Length: 76
Image 1 (tube, rainbow, N blue to C red):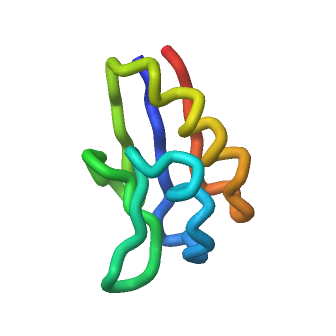
Image 2 (image 1 turned 180 degrees about the vertical axis):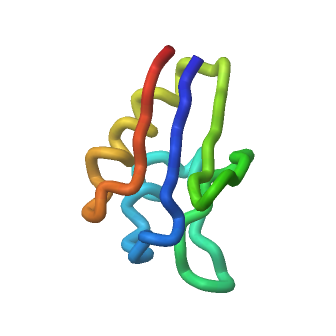
């Protein structure tokens, strides 16, 4: 299982996560911040739990590219 977490409030809208993992992230047209697709929000953290291990590599690239370090990717 892959767990990806996004702290959306701290997003600066750089778009790197979308470039690295377009199947999991997109930019909001309302506020220009990143959206973690199919995630659930709890206390400002958006979490995606997926059984599709193929998303791990691209989400890890998004994590490493994020200049404000608000994305975490774990494989359980």
